[in-house]
Image (cartoon, rainbow, N blue to C red; front, side, top):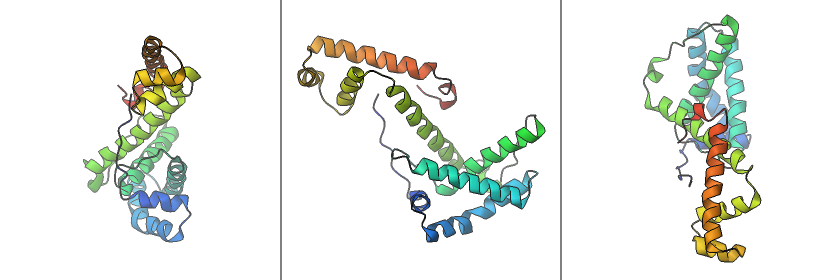
Length: 196
């Protein structure tokens, strides 16, 4: 399974700014995006203090995600931030009320493609995380064969390099992919990530 190369969105600069603790970009984030989050939270039974807390927690989460080398932002930063803040606030409301809660969306984000892109960014990064975790559970021989094959190396070259027969390399590759697929599908996170 080859991972598709996805272009990093130009708004990744905000995440890079968070990771580098760039005061100019961090200030820009607060100036440009905090009002939308305050409005969202206040429209949904929250206070400005609640919104500030949610905003801070979301920035910390984004900072943690941004530190991972394989993180990709594939949507506008404000849509991604809004998506995270919205979900955090929704979770807090559910905890407080112990019941199903719905969020009144801001009009500009109601049926916005940016929200779909933000959700896809979160899902794609969680897929990568799950894939990597399950790949790490494979034995070294599986990892060696799959890594080389996914980098474009032919199986006969892999067999020669690893000093194994072509037939064994081919059989092992199929077994390893089956094992990896089983590990991924048996993980509880699998269903929520819309994989395969």
